[in-house]
Length: 62
Image 1 (tube, helix red, strand yellow):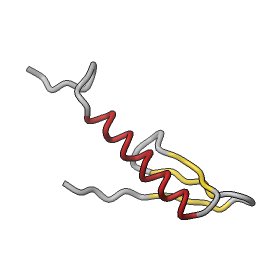
Image 2 (cartoon, rainbow, N blue to C red; image 1 turned 180 degrees about the vertical axis):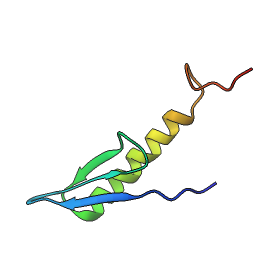
Image 3 (cartoon, rainbow, N blue to C red; image 1 turned 30 degrees about the vertical axis):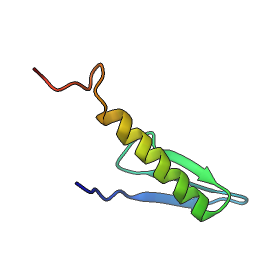
Image 4 (cartoon, rainbow, N blue to C red; image 1 turned 120 degrees about the horizontal axis):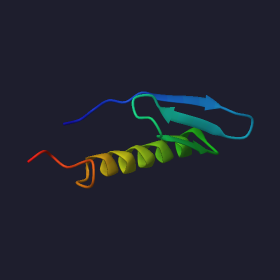
C-alpha cells in the first residue's frame, strides 16, 4: 500500500533543511532542494524499514 507523506522544507542561507511531519525523527539537509528531497526519501525509507521489521517491540502478537 502506498502512503503519502508531508515534507516540510526550508531554505537556509547555504543549504536546505526538511522533515517528514507524519514520522517523528525523519529529517535531513542538503546543499540543494533536490539533494534534500533525495536525503529525506532515504531517511523515510530507512525509518519505515526499521519500524516494520520484526524485532523486540515490533512483533505481532501470538
